[in-house]
Image 1 (cartoon, rainbow over the protein chains, first blue to last red):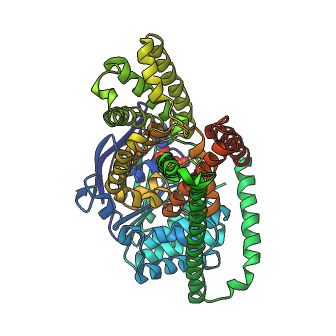
Image 2: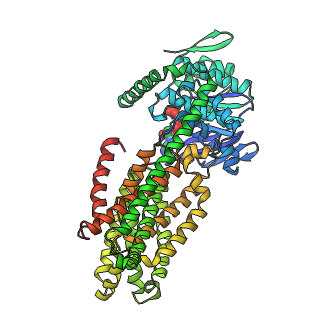
Image 3: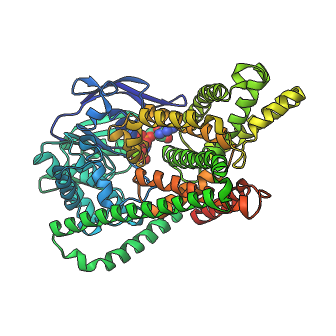
Amino acid sequence: MRSDALTKIYDGKTVVDHISFEIPKGKVVSFIGPNGAGKSTVIGMLSRLIARDGGTAEFEGKDVAKWKSGELAKRLAILTQTNNIQMKLTVWELVAFGRFPYSGSHLTERDNQAVRQAIEYMELTDLTDSFIDELSGGQRQRAYIAMVIAQDTEYVLLDEPTNNLDIYHASNMMKIIRRLCDELGKTVILVLHEINYAAFYSDVICAFVDGKIAAFGSVKEVMNPTTLSAIYGVDFEMIEVNGKPLSIYY
Amino acid sequence: MTASKAASHRQGVTAARRCGESEGASSLSGSISDSISGSISASVGRSSARKIAVMSLLALIAAAAYMLVSVNPKFAAYAFKLRAPKLITILITAFAIGGATVVFQTVINNNIVTPCLLGMNALYTMVHTMIVFFFNTGSVAFANRNVSFAVDLVVMSFASMIIYGWLFKKTKYNVLYVLLVGTVLANFFGSMQSTMVRVMDPNEYDALLVTLVASFSKVNADIITFALALMAVVIFALRKELALLNVITLGKEQAINLGVDYDATIRRLLLGVTIFITIATALVGPISFLGLIIANLSRQLFKTYRHAYLIAGSALFGMIALVAGQTVVEHVFVYSVPVSVFVTVGGGVYFLFLLMRRKAV
Ligand SMILES: Nc1ncnc2c1ncn2[C@@H]1O[C@H](COP(=O)(O)OP(=O)(O)OP(=O)(O)O)[C@@H](O)[C@H]1O
Ligand SMILES: [Mg+2]
């Protein structure tokens, strides 16, 4: 997956400014950066949810806009930052929608298996028959992620998956992302605000500031006080835990 | 910020309570709880099917009552000949409005909006008047009911695709804007229509009025066959799009993620809605709140995202209400109060109830 001079303009304001990168396959790639830096917009353009105003976004050598939507849905899944549903829907029914690209509305035994597994991954088994609109924010977030997992695509794009999650479920989420990559060989692109999660669990970090890439590289390359201070405008101190750089800020 | 926190706190509490209730189940292994969930969704399906069966029965009873109440056996054949077209028309109307409203609400992802609130009825009235205005009542485009209906349909389809397609795109499906602009448009169509009527030849106006103020007591039965055939064609042509309704429920972004060609699908469904509303309006005239009532009753009763049930339920609610209502109107009120008055009064109250209950749109 690669982009070249990717650009988005809202009302004359350039919010994504000629961004070029290539996402390495089979890696966990974290997007970090301050609010409004353009992370969600980039993810949206990569996954055909948002129309771009310039540049290219290619998936497997083919423009994402040229892919048949139904084909792309089997290879790339996206979870956006905010989701709301008007309809009465249980957790099981929501997660089962993840199988729609494969089987439509008639699920096979294999589909049911995938749904069950995704629900177990996200530890939602007890809530299988609860209605989505009656869950807590974090439980709902996990249900949506379970749906994306059930979709079982090579590429998974997650916009702030740890949003709303408590410390236990957030770190669990990150471990699951690692497993998706290490055990199932998926490429995961995620937006994170907790930079220590990014440091601890990702292979590559891409930092955005004002619609431009401020840093792109391995964890070690990006996670240093100078770079981080330049990105966030906050003072950082670094320590090392288990051979990984962790940042302290206050 | 605080409000959303409070809301998520509230949801947390209810969820916790739910967890408490199902504590017994939480110790079950994955596979058992899965078979439970399977059986629950199966039983939901079964109970929905039962509800549909009961409603169909009620609709049948209402239809029988309408046909049979105070029929003089000596003139039974004559009475049936008089009543049957009306009954069929009412059934078609209920199906058209019930189905179209559910589809429309799903497309725009909001349950208190109906095509009528956006002025589709008013647009029809204007289009119909316009045809008389430009071609006059003697023309083929008007004199033959079927031809005039076809002309209405074509003009309506184009006009509404342009107007509403544009409206939805511009407002990015923001319901409040859509409602606001829709209300303004409804007024605008209304004024255009009355302006044309004012400058019209009085005889022309008389002829126009006859076709314009169709009602349940005076249905436009000439076009029943045409309407039925057209509805069948539309449903067949849109079968793929209709099957996507369940996924569209998840919202634009999720639908695209799951591989729906969103914009094209929405456009086609919207065209179908327009045609169905045009059919209903041409048959019995505008009935503003009917769709709102029956679609929401159906959503309340079935509590599901499955559109097969929602659409069938909505149509059946409409059939029961309209047929029973018309029976009462004809035999108890002896035509003094038309059924549309009940629909409008009841619908207004129900609309307020929905608004109050939801608090936020
Ligand atoms: N639909 C829109 N219309 C107009 N401006 C928009 C729209 N969506 C985003 N923007 C603007 O684009 C910029 C980038 O937004 P984006 O959502 O990509 O930021 P982000 O990096 O994801 O931020 P956050 O961390 O807060 O999620 C912001 O300045 C935002 O105001
Ligand atoms: Mg964002």
